[in-house]
Amino acid sequence: MIDLHSHTTASDGSCTPTELIGLARERGLRALGVTDHDTVGGLAEAALAAAAAGIELVPGIEISVDYIHGEFHLLGYYVDYHNRDFAERVAYLQENRFNRNAVILRKMQETGLSVTMEDVEAEAGGGQIGRPHMARALVTKGYVGSVQEAFDRYLADGMPLHVPKVKLAPPEAIALVHRAGGVAVLAHPKFLEFPDFAQLRAELQRLKDIGLDGLECYYSQHTEQETADYLAVAREFGLLVTAGSDFHGVSKPTVPLGIIYQGAGGDEALLAPLAERAGRTRAERCSVRSGAG
Image (cartoon, rainbow, N blue to C red; front, side, top):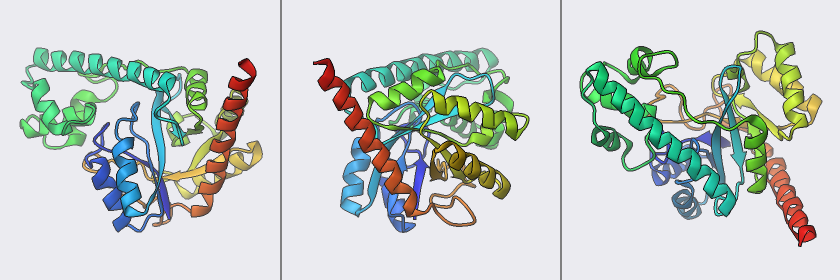
């Protein structure tokens, strides 16, 4: 089994990269995609832990994309996280996330919620700070009873503490993944929130035309009908198929690692086409560079 969508303390997960790999081994996973939000900060540690555990690491990232419909997250698989251009762009996203965190904390103070950066850093355990860590700080301080309540009352879109974050446009995000030799996959398509499948299908065709490589058809929160629909459109447009739980740990306690569809993990057969596409992307990139020289 495989699981190609998970998060660590490098973004908003509750497991360190080493702990996550250990959990993957306990669950019997052959391969694990580590796809932290707008950062590759956990991949070096995950690579060492995966090598020791005998698990194949699929190095990835989940990029927040500026989009008019719902929530657009782009998964980048097999990215070269040592690539300088890629690292600089990701650092830009992280810097803006840090600035956003400062604004949210200021809003907390103005609202009468006495939470400091030190409180939130303690919840993050040294990793990149995100809203789930702020939610846990609110729980620790006794302002709310749960992480979900913190989001519902304060941190979700439209709530008093919500601050929009800087996001890349779809073509820019896809191109960024490709420049790093990776494969660009649309995460959890249901969250695009199109009113009907025909409109979603048309949009997937447009995204395919601008370089989208794949679709996360198997996802822990997709229904069987949604899964069937996404598989059909992936076949129609020649998109790669991936499978991921979106494991976070404490902030998503009902989403276990390695449980994606019908109580099981993803099929290992999905991995080879993904790796093959990544290899082709890197070969094409090298060919362009050689021609430019």
